[in-house]
Structures are given as C-alpha cells and as structure tokens.
Length: 237
Image 1 (cartoon, rainbow, N blue to C red):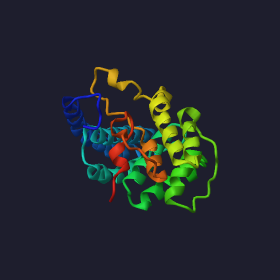
Image 2: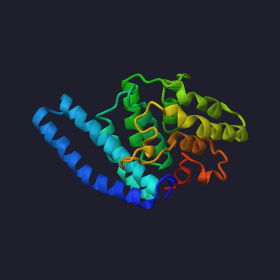
Image 3: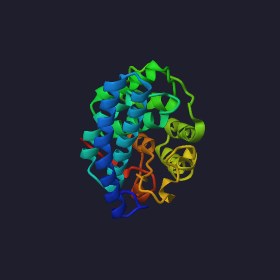
C-alpha cells in the first residue's frame, strides 16, 4: 500500500464501494442522456458524479498499491468524462491532476492535447497549467506567469524557475511538506481520513511528482514522504 493512513481492510471496502457504484453511475448517465438530452442539467449532474467516482477510484488504485499499468488503462476514460464536466473555476485541481498523471505515466500525447483544448477554450492562461502543457506541446502559445489559485500553487514558481537543482529539490520538499495539504482546505476531500465513512481515497500531490520528473530533481529518500507519488515519478513505458 502506498497510502500510510489506512490499512488493507479500508481499501478492500473502497473497492467494493466502487465495484457497486461505477456500473450504477454509468447506467445513470446513459439513462439521463436518453431521457433529458446530453446538454441537460440532469446530464451535467450525472457526468459530475461519474467523474468524481472515476477519479476517486483512480486515487484508490494508487493509494492501495495497484499497478501503474492499471491506472494508465483507466486514464482515457477519465479524460473522456472530464471533457463533459470541465469548468476552469471548479475543476482546476482536477485538470492539474490529469495533466500531471498523464505526463508521469507517459500517456499518448493526444490525451494531453484534448486537455489543452479545454484550457484553450476557456482561455485559462495559468502558469502551472502552461508549464505542464508546454512540456508535451512546445507549440503551446499561452505564456501567463500568474496562478489562478495562488494558494498553494504559487509555491511552485520558485521550484520551476530555480537554476539550481539542489535548491529546486529543497523548495519542492518544502512545498509538499508545508504548503500542499494545508493549501487545499477548501477542497471536499480535505481531512476526509478523519471521517468514519469509507470514502477516503488518499492524498497525492501529483503536480509535485510531475515537476520532479520534468526537472529531473533529486528525490532520493522521498519514498516515504506523505503526498509525494514516488513510484509514479519513476514510471517508464
């Protein structure tokens, strides 16, 4: 298990939960589209529930220690659903996650291109999003140097712009250990591990992993660091 907060029995419960929920929500989406139309309010709500379910399932796979190949196989489905729910004000974190995971798992570039089209459509000129997209798509034209959400992401500016890899590694460690989790207090999953229900699916700073990978930073000894997706950084297709 990659997550250290929960034991195996928790992840077994989570898998049973998603084994029941995902087929149900997939069927609900199809029924809603059939009855109300693809652009209806009901369809939008169903898509949102579907995406949150698949994203939670993917996090559960990673937290529980499942193979990276299994997560990579799920990735196209996540992107496909995400296109139906994307909103730059409410789905920013999820965009960061999908870009980060996709780059770390070396997915087909077409998926990164699909995500970039969503950002372009909504004129999202954000420093972190631009950095991630530009890594795979050098022709990406947006060059904004501001963050749509300063807290906690502006802490990554000095990491990315550092000219010294040792300094960048220390800055990234500081971001992960001191800023990342506390900077997400407004997210619905914050402190979910303290709840008695079974919905906790792990806390992962995927953007920290992809930045370490892109910049080739020294993360020796970070395998036990909370929130850092250590082995995803090391994935090779």
